[in-house]
Image (cartoon, rainbow, N blue to C red; front, side):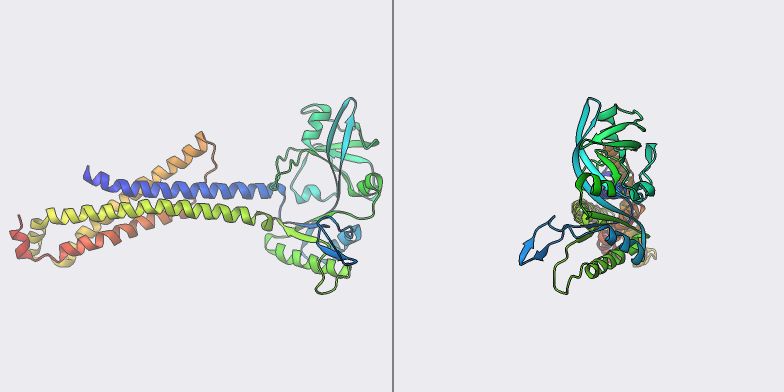
Length: 389
């Protein structure tokens, strides 16, 4: 019973460490999945920079200098660009029959499904020919389709009205859900960006450019090269503010990831206190054991055992107690993590590194807290030990 209670501190400590780290890893995995659902290796270029015009500092959204030619220049002149889609967005009332819905009209290019790894559920995405001719074709998000035509229906070939202009539905995107920044990706209609510019807004500029880099390692260089190219094209002098903004998803998610990591370290630190308490418990029980077994120690020393033999005997006992508690604690941690996922639907992920770290910490704890009692036992005088009652 005393041994079991001694191990309890280690069991609770290791189980808590495994569970807390699993919760932190699960939260990070959720954030990464949200980022991946938006797309891979994405760089966003927005015409929302802070710049001066006639001595007046223009605010966010005040720039209209991003053009389709800029998008073409990035595609042809910046190395490492895999996919690119110019964007011109609007909001409008969409009508079909007696149904209507106010939603986002996202003008984009043919690379958008490739950038965001997003297939169609029905029909096809519009073609490069549609972009070149500013065709009035539309691909519906799942939410818009459900409201206008009914849940699960295939509306391809139907005509809808956007600002009283007819658009032909050529496809429906699969459900994507909420994006990392919070917007509902399914509550949108996707049309050629040229149609938005010429038919809906009657403008000559675009609002954004979405770029996908060839690899995750090249994102920063591609983003820097895009900024250099646009500054040169827009004739922005050194020291002047950009009239555009280049952002990567890593930048957007960094604060959330840092907050999650901080919370993981905090919870692991709290759980580590339990390991410390467990180690003190092991040292306490080993000191009691040395006192109770003083006569046995004296007998061993008197018949030829060396101090090293006695030291190793008690040190091994402490390490075994610690490791056994650690193994049980690892099992408890796995069980708690699975229970949190199954019953509370909290995402958890137990990494092999966390298990290895917990096991190593228990071994070190056993050696650290068991050394003093073992050394005390090895230093006993044989004659005094034999006389001890």
